Amino acid sequence: MDDAETTTCLNGAKRQHVDRSSAQRKSSLRLWFKFLLLFCLGAFVLCYTLPGSVTSQWVSDSFQKHYERIFSRIHQNISHPPYKHYKDDETTRGKIPETTPGKTQLTTPGIIQETTPGIIQETTAPKTTLPTEARTGIQFHQAYPRNYHFIMDNTEVCNTRKPFLVLMVPVAPNNVAARDAIRQTWGSSSLVQGKVVLTLFLLGLPSGADFQQQQEKVRQENQQHHDLIQSDFMDTYLNLTIKTMVIMDWLATRCPTAAYAMKIDSDMFLNIDNLMVMLQKPGIPKTKYLTGYVMWNIPVIRSMDSKWYVSEELYPDPQYPTYTLGMGYVFSNDLPQKFVEVSTSITPFNIEDAYIGMCMKKLGFPVTPPPDPGQFRTYNIMYNRCEYSKIITYILGSSEELVRYWTDLKKPGPPC
Image (cartoon, rainbow, N blue to C red; front, side, top):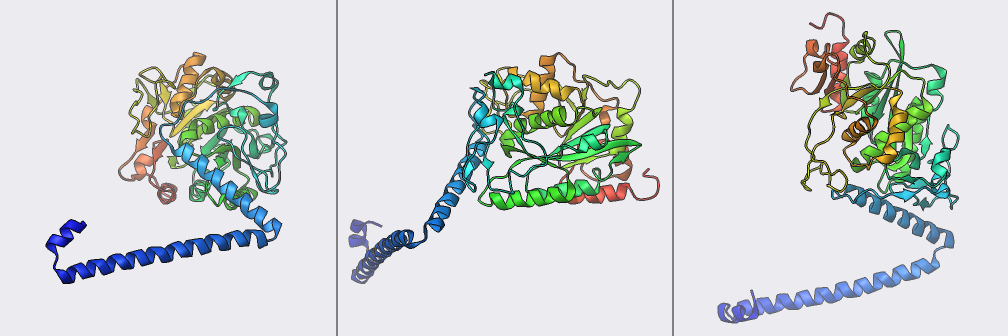
């Protein structure tokens, strides 16, 4: 209500009440202004009276949190700018730059390298160096996996026992519940039907103010289970293509002797016995083989409001090539090296499974439907023991469901 309305509509008593309230508000504002001045003065004096080391640490921590917030916001923005192409620089990607311990070094887009001793730098693998062709000035895009470094590794797992199948599970660093559920269920056995099976989890870097605490928890978890692999890209939804290509690079460089591999999401039910039966059927290719839930003639989503938006600049065609749904696809282990090589000539976009389909198209290899396409399922309304005994994959709603369904499926007695 303005002054004119007050004059004409209110009686004398009401006018006095309004004037009193206005005076009280002005008085409150003056008090808050004085308090703010005193607070700023106190903070200024405190900075000069604290020991230098304390002030320096406070500034360092503030800058680290600032950069983490920036990177988090960049990668959460759905209208993601196009991936930029840049020359390889051995000083920033072939080795970890020397820097003051405790500070965050920003080098490659999408990378944060934490140099606190005993957290990020600790690894069981030798330092990663770029291949010769990467040091000669060749152009790389942001999703090229050898732009990144394995900062936590378990290189010995494929040397101790030659695996028939490697299950690679991309998972967020803080999703311990999903990893524990998998360790209790389809990832619990290293020997299935007489064949060696490995289950490994691929992580990027956590974001947030508790970066160092999350990293320490990941390190301790790996010391206990020896099944975590971590690379120095930011672990975000829009970086799933990077994450998938890093998986391919690990398989190509750390585990080339495996016969098959599977990229499978952490929210999946996997009937590992049925998968092993499928892979040992006569006629299943041993090379150039990719199978799963096959997607044909899928249109590219151009709406910027969609989670799956891809711009024409990143992917100009109106439809994706044939690909396998990213929930879980199986491939012969000769393909990872080929994917890494051919990816240098394919502009990356943020739909990771369609990007693998693009790699297959560029290589000239067909995507093969499974012998029984009905075994690769997406969602199921309710659990049925008989049905789960026949399928290979299902998408679940929670880690608790995975443990509950698995326990029921494995109980004594025929499932049907």
